[in-house]
Amino acid sequence: MDWPALRLSLQLGVWTVVFLLPIGLALGRWLAYRNFTGKAAVESLVALPLVLPPTVLGYYLLVAFGGASPLGQIWQSLFGSPLVFTFAGLLIASIIFNLPFAVQPMQRGFEAIPRDVRDAAASCGMTPWRAFMRVELPLAWPGIITALVLSFAHTLGEFGVVLMVGGSIPGETKTVAIAIYDRVQAFDEGAAARMSALLLGISLVAIALTFALSRRVGRRLG
Image (tube, one colour):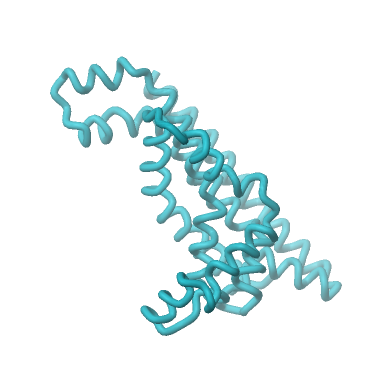
């Protein structure tokens, strides 16, 4: 078992969820409640990582993060280190390729809230922030939980984007998915099988937890 790779994957998954929570809430709620010219284009752009081959997305991110790009140069000047082949670059890439897994379930959760419920909250004198915290978040909670769990699980299993942007630097960018690939390449099927089984178990637990929490919240709200 490659414990450093597993620890790095879990760290990447947690930080990805931490950053995607406010991004998903803001973007998902905005797309759920607003109708505007170009909305379909924005939704398509958010969903693009779902259909784009990971190596293609990874290539474009590698170019965008590289030392010759404006973003790469700005990052280098601010932090004194390159963005590619670092954990920071891997985290930004993870946020981007997990965007649809976070935004779409949250958007559906907010869309499921009846308009009259939000109007009733406003008529009761609730401020927009209080209505968001006391009414909208509890009602959209199943979608939010689904988004966070899917993002975390997808981060653990992502291979193509991680390899393109981060490479395979032990302790820095070598995740458990890459460690499994390395073990297969080395014909160490036992280690590959153990790590694969562990990822499978984590994914099953995450999905079961999502369903359990969603049902519990649904019964409480019902």
